[in-house]
Image (cartoon, rainbow, N blue to C red; front, side):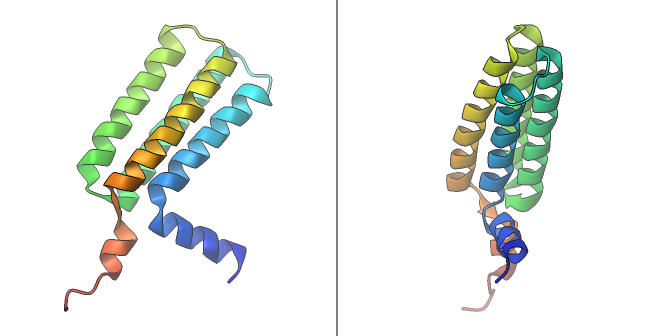
Length: 123
């Protein structure tokens, strides 16, 4: 099994973990490795948080849980990033920690759509 098929399988069966891990990784890179302003870091982290929520909603069930929690996470991220005028390192650290927590919570409470599609209806 090559690397790409392993990554595809991981995304199919653990979409919340992958989406939120990527979000936290991007936030960490932005905050600590790139020399971006607070506004630039805030913009990218809010967009990636929204994308992580969308990917989780598309790839897992029930959709309502992903949509509501993802929307709240995106709103909280935007409020913290743009309303509190935090430094880029704080924005990145908060996003990384929140992504780790959300990934773990979603993993416990959602069922990947691939697992539902692969389930046999005859028992």
